[in-house]
Image (cartoon, rainbow, N blue to C red; front, side, top):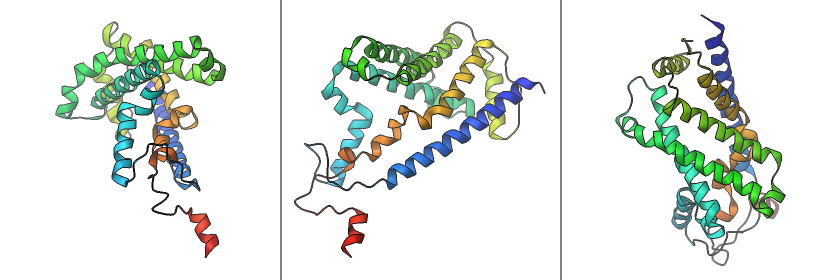
Length: 242
């Protein structure tokens, strides 16, 4: 066994561990963070089912972003929708027998990479050309977008220009699931793509990309607008009243 697959196996085991542990830690932290005030963004739902519906609209359609700025909404939605299809398409690398719907979305996931990269380029241009956005942008904001663009571009090059041995790639990742290290193609483009993906997995839990799970814990989004009907009392405040 050459050093290449061993190195990448260690890299992906470490990246997966850091991703899972980091995400779980952050989600537990979000869940335990007190929400002492009733602060739903109005007009807000007055029932729990309404909150669920509102959250679905936020996650699927980015409703608040649409109301705020149409161009950011367009590029953001293109990126996220493209990313979703691309990720679902990649499930085939982790299944010995591919589910039928994963086979079904392969062509859609293939061309969704265009939407993903176009959306990212639009979001990157927004940080450069919109004065108020450029003013509040940190270097990490640009670097995260560049990292995602590089991942998308390298994946597109392998899909449409320089193909790699996807059978061997699938064998490598199926082997990782069985804790068995299988051969990995030594294409420079593939290795670059995999290295960037592992880097993204490592820094995801400590980056702004954590807004993905964070939106579900936002008090302005997940609270029911019923302060007149029901007194809002934080758990710590309830302890003081005992």
